[in-house]
Structures are given as structure tokens and as C-alpha cells.
Image (cartoon, rainbow, N blue to C red; front, side, top):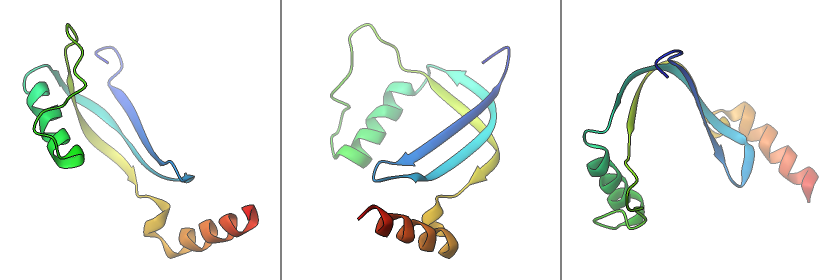
Length: 93
């Protein structure tokens, strides 16, 4: 990342792999500071646990902060793509 700070992040819907969000940008900071607190915050939000339970002894968490230069919202946010996705699902049935 220090040699090439460009980064791409794709997040796919497991029930519809064509429904995804895309973020492209540059790495602005890589740090260990606050990484453990951050994973606990995510565990609280998504798992309803005060502490992340799947820690591995000896492993360090890292925070990678990104400056987004391009973002594409999931298809579900668009009427055009909702229609396309519904048609695709009907074809599968």
C-alpha cells in the first residue's frame, strides 16, 4: 500500500451477487492505533456483543483509512436495477 496507495472495495449481496456496492480510492492512513476498539464497536453494532469474540492470540488488527474517489451504490437503490434484478430472479425460477 505504501508503493501503490490505490484501493478498491467491492461489497456483494450474498443473495444476489450482481447487487453490490463499489468504492475506489486511495489509502490515506494505515495504523494499529484504535483497531481493537474499532472491531469491538463493530461487534456491538452488528453482533450485539460488547467485545469481538473471534480474536486470535498474537494477531494484530490494522485500520486502513480510505479517501473515496469513486462510489457506486448498490443496484437496489435504483428503480432500473430493481427491475433488472426482479427479471433475473424470475428467470431463475
